[in-house]
Image 1 (spheres, rainbow, N blue to C red):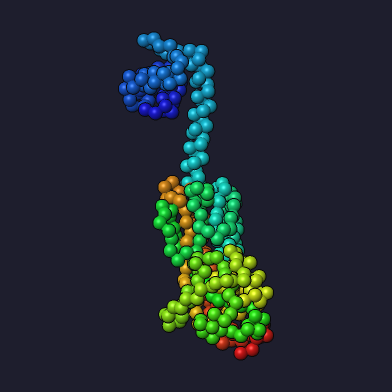
Image 2 (image 1 turned 90 degrees about the horizontal axis):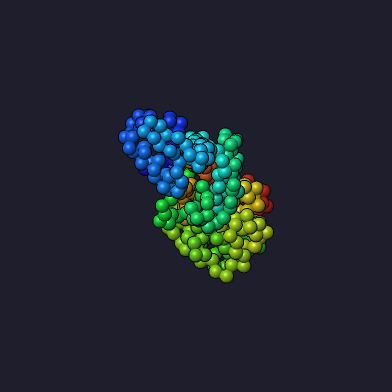
Amino acid sequence: MDMLENMRTFVRVVQAGSFSAVAKQTDVATAQVSRAVASLEAYAQIRLLNRTTRKVALTDSGRRYFERLQSILGDVDQANAEARNALVRPYGRLRVHTMPGLGQSHVTALAVAYRARFPDVAIEMTYSQRMPNLVEEGYDVSVVTAASLPDSACIAHSCGTSFSVLVASPAYLARHGAPAVPADLARHTCLRLDTPAEANGEWLLHGAGGQAVSHAVTAAPFHANAPEAMSIALRAGLGIGSLAIYSAIDDLRSGRLVRVLPDYRLTMLDVYAMYASRRFLDAKVRTFVDHLRATLSPALKADTRALDALAAPHGREHARALSGVTA
């Protein structure tokens, strides 16, 4: 019997007035109840009860101990009730990590919509391009893009897929021309973004026919670890770079950026919502991941449809009209 249970037994003995009454209440032997109290006295190194054959009586030390235990056990019961409630009702602080482009385009807006449904949850959002250690860094959920996940004890739920495309500003293409085939990239200024799509500074371009061509981005005059920084550099006409479609789609729609090598895309990446463990899963984590699974995948598919619409003839003409670029 653990010490917390011994404390509960002692409180019951005081309230019931005898060992035998507690034995009947808990369906154990009277000797077992007596041993539990004796063990507690040995642990506390004080005599708690004066025993006779007919009744038990608190010592002065026992009375003080009993009063303190009632408060302590009440706090323990309250903590257990709150913990059990957290498995049922979403509340408290939810620490979320996400990669910057994904967070700026979708995850933050979806988190705001989630909190409208569950106002007792306070969300702490962190953007970082790297994949965190959830346990060591204290995150409840991480939303990441990855070609593959490292071996981990974490639970990962798929929330859709996405990919990156090559883009540049109309001004850059007017000065330098647009590459017609991947080999032409060697004659252009290429900018580097640290993302899973550009592992080791390499663009792996996949054509519509299934062919794959690699281009190493070396000696880049601009190197960033956040899509927003890359977008600024690309809109300023510094060169050609890659952006995930969710980071590029608004600039493509407006004509501030133009797709380069439109028959090619970078490696398809999976989008995952990850958390540390299934065991005793907190309600706020469970409901937030369910919310992401229901909403993020449709949002990513909408990005792809928007990109396809721009690739259609009327979409290309509209983009040229906005940008002033002629065929």
